[in-house]
Length: 235
Ligand code: MN
Image 1: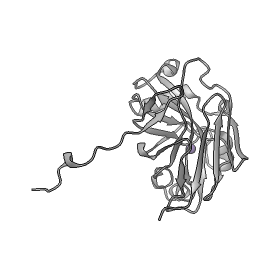
Image 2: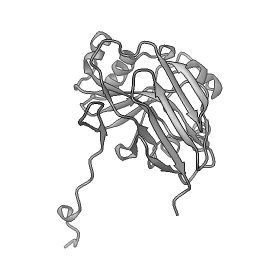
Image 3: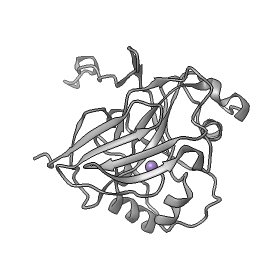
């Protein structure tokens, strides 16, 4: 008889993100769009700018919150930031029409898609999965979620990221190849969306590497900002 009983293990911790004005948003899954700004596709030297969007996932427990200290991760010498608008899903759906997509959105946040760029490039060159480059501990910083109370829904507004007070990324949400509703629609053709799902929507140009001690500040007009500090690798 096996000496380990599942019900003797401690419960797995839930992941929650603070909501602007109070409360918390429970996280179910974390999706990311692979490429969504032309200038970033060009800086990465990637091929077809008209390709349909593709999605990958990060582990739910890779979420870290505003103010977090993020240890420089193992298995990389090229640890990079990507500032992104994050969509928080509040209503389930599959094959969601574009005209109904906004009805499924509960709120928005500022996120950073932390990336082991060297491992991502290896994956691209060797036609391997993206996990080593994208899905690791603390790889998904996310700021407080602002409920989507009005109809603005980020058709256009500034998205910026600075390191130690120096601006590195500046774009506009209006530059996204696939708009917020289109992203919801496309992902819902592949997966059933459920309340608690997050979608990181891609990054503009200017991505770059950080080192321990760096302070990263990410902003999107109208949303709570997101600040993290990179600390030395854990022993
Ligand atoms: Mn990204």
